[in-house]
Amino acid sequence: MDFERVFDESYERVLKRQLDGETFFQAFYRRFTASDPGVAVLFHHTDMQRQQQLLEKSFYRLVVFYATNYADDYLEKIAQRHSKRELNIAPHYYDLWLDCLIDTLADFDPLFDANIELSWRLVLSTGITYMKFKYDH
Image (cartoon, rainbow, N blue to C red; front, side, top):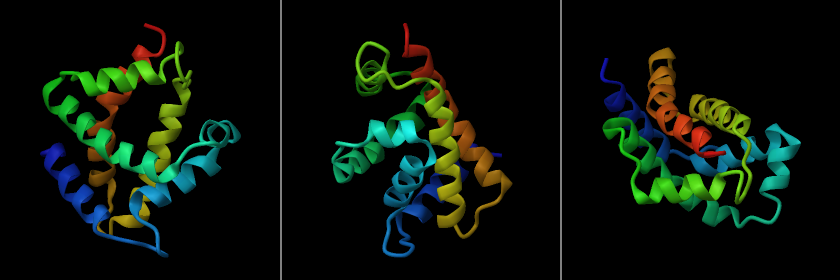
């Protein structure tokens, strides 16, 4: 299976869709911030519209990292910013982030199935592993 192709096609579908007046990233952040009190605290004073735009941009970098195993300057800066030294985003939040993303995906992608879920998890897990590693390195 071409996981990157399956991911790309699914990603295109979810970006085109709105549910209850929300975009994919709006619904994701609503779910993510409600998933854990610690997450809500992390985003308490955040401009969520800007945050959603940053996530859309960083998604591309995660896909490129999966395809090339190369962390460009942008991904490196994100990793540094989220590390223990700066924002102190604990590694366990990345697993919660991915689970909330998949739950949102299930709502937004009308073709959602196990292969699509696996594709998203595989494409994003390489970058997530990188982010976790950079937390204290």
